[in-house]
Length: 74
Image (cartoon, rainbow, N blue to C red; front, top):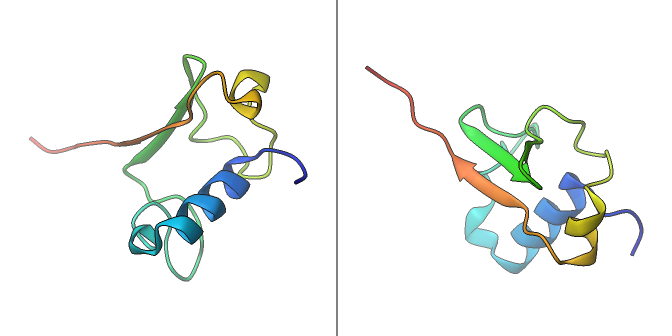
């Protein structure tokens, strides 16, 4: 129900899979963790507002929202 947003998708994902709570977003802040990126429709949505509507193909279910763990180091 309502707009399909990053927050709505991640809330639903964490509700269905409680073990993911705190891995994609911080427990206390509910903000995306620094090395987690969100992609959809060949766009990096990581720095978009969590309440911004996702692209229409994602909302329709014809394109995935990809949650990708980034790596850093040297």
